Length: 229
Image (cartoon, rainbow, N blue to C red; front, side, top):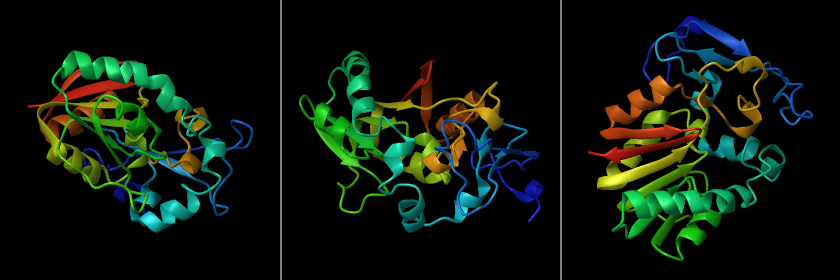
């Protein structure tokens, strides 16, 4: 299949080029999978980048090749360090923007540490699409997705669920890095082994949010907040 046939999972435009990943970065953590060369397709319209080959992967394949016992070697903060570090900021946003919040859904909850912390003040639901047996999705006043968006190549799946389960007037709190201005071929975040199969541009992220009825509130570094209208 020609690269020009690859459709952007954000806006549907055809890819105009592919950017190969520098696998020697970061102490060989990004070792090549299956002996293949991996490259990110680039969208000329919204400027997002993605790994087209992962569009067809099943949840079982992601579990086998990405979210396995060695995943922590790639994401060193997966052990709960990230959740504990970011919790004060998340708590601040919730109390400031949704002062009557009763339930928080942590989407892509991983090991559940953030949901445990949130559970000290709110009813907190931990949901992860790759973990069998996790809690089911429930309507919530706030949905968090911390370092999750870049893991969902089939973007409409995530955004459909966020739009469905976020209460009207509720806030979607997410963190992810924008690809704008980055040298993708030598950027730590462009990491197939970590499961980073879709990296948004600012334009792409706002386009997707607005398409699902979420109004951009603000961006601050890798923090991005949206309110359901």
